[in-house]
Length: 341
Image 1 (cartoon, helix red, strand yellow):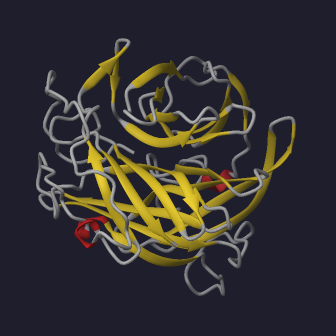
Image 2 (cartoon, helix red, strand yellow):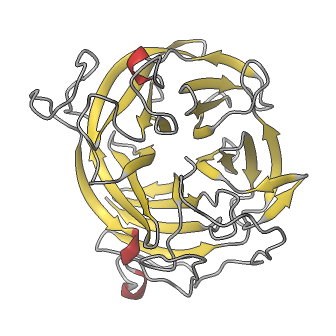
Image 3 (cartoon, one colour):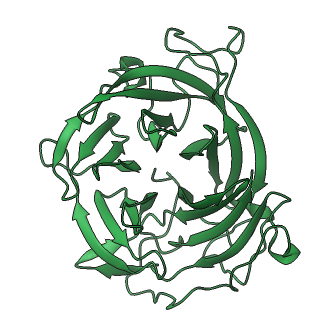
């Protein structure tokens, strides 16, 4: 989402770095100097795409990442564009505009590339989840519970709805994460909505779960792991201080289905999605990064997108990206993590 803070106006023409702005690959269990925590290491980062353009489209405002079927990266802009990126250099290869049924741009936030190549994209305006073809055409629109709609239609707050989207192992269950709590729910308790595949690319509503964030933080992204657990990003911003970004391992497999519970107040016997802190990104080495505004660690920025790019038992390669909001004091930055789960 676009953080509502007093930020300087975008200044065109800021030069982008031409190559990876960090040391080469490191291993979480051997390179202590790259360790963020016992579970996470930061291999490097890249600012190469910051304040650049491709095919007449600004490259940035990234809210989600996905791995396409050919191994390339897809990067979703919340200004209604979907980029294809080279997985090695991050160089843009293509850009596809997205729109709603009336041709209006989406506030596009979450992305899944399905096994047939269709793109599942959330917009936090209503909120909504649409299925798009590879060339951007709308194929279908998934049902959304009325309570998750933005007020006055529902109980959600504008710009605080569907931010994360992921397909669970087996490909039959889709999960979207709300960013912040509904009106009537306890502060910090966000809803994870799921859908079950019915055939022909269609989905029907399924179970809903509750997840509690750290105080003041929201959920910008979730990613499913092969065993059914989730990586969850939590993020917040304090003017004059900077961003807080934490990575959690979460387990929804024994959580209560909250579909029929109107208000989650902490006294309803609900079993929340369990979570374990993997790292606070502020604890990562800065690796020579610079920040354009105050940050607890200069490597931090408005991190919003995440994708698992590789895995073997107990080890993951994870790519993060920040949303620069097309703003001069924020940076489009990619982060290469190694994660032990």
